[in-house]
Image (cartoon, rainbow, N blue to C red):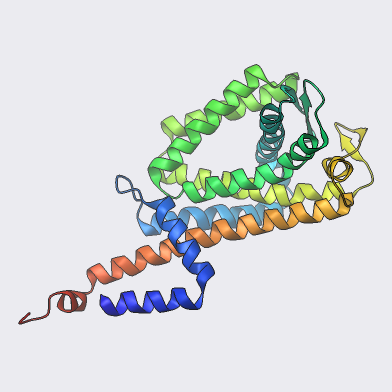
Length: 290
């Protein structure tokens, strides 16, 4: 066991970034009451990522992924709304449309720093939520809790904040499906579903940034003028292209970091399981004649 620990310490010294990610993953995943078998967690994440990749490249894949694109839009607009509340702008309502676009409305005007935070919230908040769900959804108990929290949050927002009929129905149906999954889905199905939701949130955050490189923002088929990137540039500095590129990099880094944390945690768990099953480790810990 001492040899294993020494090799681990050496590896950490050689790669400090992996050491930091490993320590974080150890903290996030410590859950003695509920640890899914390694093969179940591996399969859940692999199925979610593979399904995401395949569906995006199938002719009918967009139709099957449509509910998850609406979910990503809800996360995007809700992120704007949360920062509106925190910045003092007030959160009036959100609207979600059939073309998966959406809008969030503040109650009052605010200064440039608050406007910048509100503008950045959508494209920074969605991948952050996706990464958090991906990291925390790797145990059976937490996967079910995530479905419950998502369902409850969507139900409340559908009643309180979503102001158009299509948006309220779409978010309400999504809330119902999440709560049904929480109550009725098996533990394995819950893990696959949560991993798929997380993957779609991160992927949609990346794909949605493409609209920021256009001259105008189109919402519900109408030209709405400035995009979030335009508003960010006006409130701070730089160009819309600069901020779109920064948010794109943010999304990529978050997705990589989340997958890296999951990988390092599972690698550590396998090493511990192998050490526990290896009888030679017992002789190292309790040498004969000691």
